[in-house]
Length: 142
Image (cartoon, rainbow, N blue to C red; front, side, top):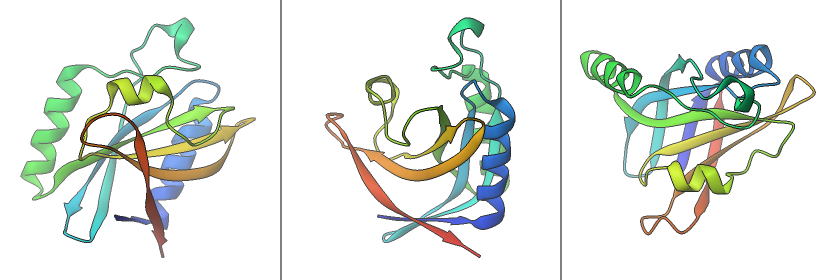
């Protein structure tokens, strides 16, 4: 599946990830899902509420955030199509923790942040049987 993200949204994600370093940061991807591509129309940053001493390698949000952003997406004629987060000083590949907490049919964009600089961004989708992630084709659009 192709995932299309505007360069301006990529810059916003990179800025959020770099500002939050050395902790993980993340949020929701709002957009439209088609048969051949998912187009990301907007992002919504969400505070990391994981235990403070664990935020360098874990990210969590409140269930109320999920509901609030789902309502906001609906009101704008969009859908929650995925989720993005950072991996400080680690590769932009899903961890076992990511797999255990992910949902099939969602796009997961992970950004590697090395020494406070966003370096690599990749898109992933969890298989229906939840056994592993498959890499999506992430296209950064001007």
